[in-house]
Amino acid sequence: MAIHTVLVTGGAGYIGSHACVELLEAGFNVVVVDNLSNSNPESLARVQKLTGKSLAFYEVDIRDKQSLSDIFVKEMPDTVVHFAGLKAVGESCEQPHLYYHNNVFGTLVLTEVMQAHQVKQLVFSSSATVYGITDKTQYSEDLPIGAINPYGRSKAMVEDILRDLAEADKIAKPDKPWKIALLRYFNPIGAHESGLIGEDPNGTPNNLMPYVAQVAIGKLPQLSVFGDDYPTHDGTGIRDYIHVIDLVKGHIKAIHAFNNAHFVEGNCKAYNLGAGRGYSVLEIIKKFEEVTGKTINYKIAPRRPGDLAEYFANPELALQELNWKVEKTLHDMVADTWNWQSKNPQGYR
Image 1 (cartoon, one colour):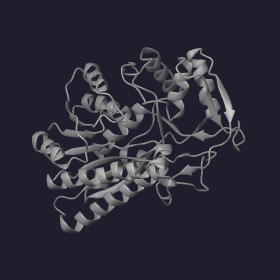
Image 2 (cartoon, one colour):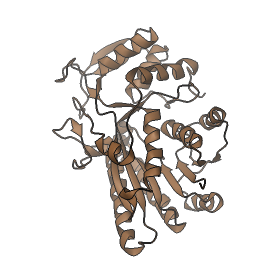
Image 3 (cartoon, helix red, strand yellow):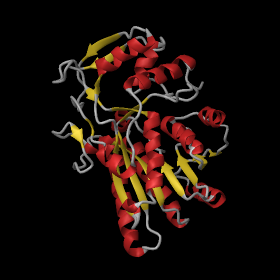
Image 4 (cartoon, one colour):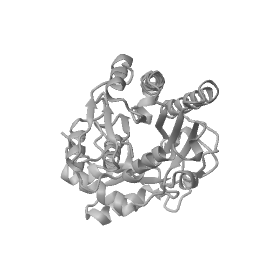
């Protein structure tokens, strides 16, 4: 069987670095392109140590069309897994221009270069935030798109662009059509079980699990729980959490699926990557205390505007068409997070 080369944009980041481990262990050649704006090259050194395999790394911004094109000429990838993007909802509301330029324009440049080099297989890192506010608690891929912040809208815009690209080439270039998987993440947490790589946010974490871990290690004094009066079993918000290793295995399943009937004629399809159930903020805290023996100092704070009481994925389509489902438990997610945080109290620094 031919060895495929996968170009991973944003491959030094949290999800990207875990994807590199799984891709290398699955037998792919890996080429990473990352501008290191929110990542550390140490993650890639550890990926190579962990797998005993080498990868190619280029410190390049995907908006740099010439440099990106030179990489395609040299490395000749046949598939792209696209993680490169800014991802903080709050920051996107403060700096929308930055998000549209990086996430949307960056993807336009990337796909132009892919098209020029006849590389038509793309796995895109999308988000459940594309759904926006709905009266449903379980999200299926057929729900209407209605993102409510610039981050979510940037992901929704990219999805639209990719669907249009795929549709145009079905007619114009039926012999070499696009095959695109839009993977809508719910809430990735956890770390590699080795503790060598994990989530290392710049500054104060935006997400619950790294914040809890930094309170547990003593790096942050206290966690704010935003709202305890939601119509849920303990009053706190419920979210669908997924182990990062389960998540990145979904990308490998998507690459393999490009050869099955769902992508034969060139297609662009969205898939939810989630567990199909949720955990509340207090359940996460309780489990963290149970696994680590640490007491998590927290306070109840007012609700944040726009936060929903509860939502989680319907992951059935990913099971049917990608043969993918979550395997790891909440205990695994917490234990692996703590293993990473306790071994790397300052992250990669």
